[in-house]
Image 1 (cartoon, rainbow, N blue to C red):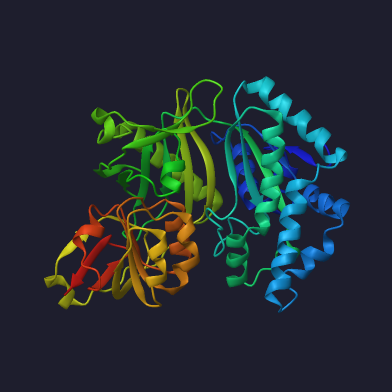
Image 2 (image 1 turned 120 degrees about the vertical axis):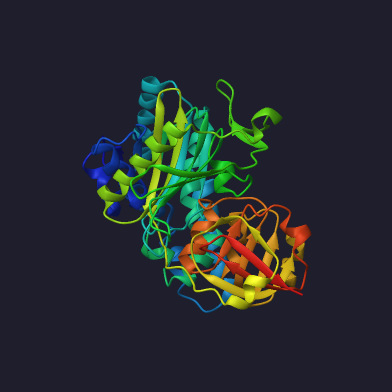
Length: 428
């Protein structure tokens, strides 16, 4: 389209160095005929040009270049406030708003604005849940604010911590932005193209998939063969959904009791989605994790990124004689440690290195303490949540959707977490 804006599916939009791996994967899948919604990308060069226009290069370089923590925080704050509080340069803003108007005219839908960093969605550094996504935008000013917030997300504290653990300097990278229409989803979820037993896995909930990504519901779990045929269905507990009424932003809504434990997908739909997941795996040439949505027209593919998986751990037979609970495995690792049952974030200071955290909701905010955990157990969430992705990346065993885990697992007990089998056992 222009030097800063390119249509999703165009040749430039398939280049990760221009638009980030997240957007580039979507563009390549769209060109290959997969059901990816239309859209456009604001290229990473726009971010660089905005920083140059605001004179922020020194702050960008200083954040990780100094050993003075106070100075580093000031540099990072300068970046965030500079990107959030200043107008977007006209050379960037005018083609950006023109592309937005064209997409609205073509689809009539609310807009979705998502970060697509150049360091994101790569094998070993997925950044799952670390940046920003904005759903259901209608107002032009809200759209502009969302774009600036995506840029500033590169300098958020949680993102900087993540980059530090991966030896990445934010000054050496840039942030692109992906814009697409909001899918009016009846159901949505994720998928893993390969599991430890050689099969595939799907998760599903009612409405938009953000409730799965944030670990807020226990989704339906569909276990499939390597060819994408349904083998087993474990129905979840989906007590709320994220949805939107006409021309309004998505909101959490209570789910009628009649469908809380009703499967979101029929067997035929699960098989169809499984076969598409298999084709994505083959097309990309590696194990993948996807996000999808189902509207009245059929399935839409919303994201695909590399999947980190490892072989199952051989269980010490002494554990087989102790109480057990089952849930949704993140798909990696075995860990043992002291169980620390936490019902509020204010209690996280009790968690020491080598402990196993037991909590109700495992959201992306817990990513900062993942490195010191021997394992994690949560009452809600599924195998395709953002925190599960981060746990796989770090090799930390995690089991989600474990019913009444905080009530049944004794605080202080010796706890074993099998992140491949989805089993938790304890002693004492």
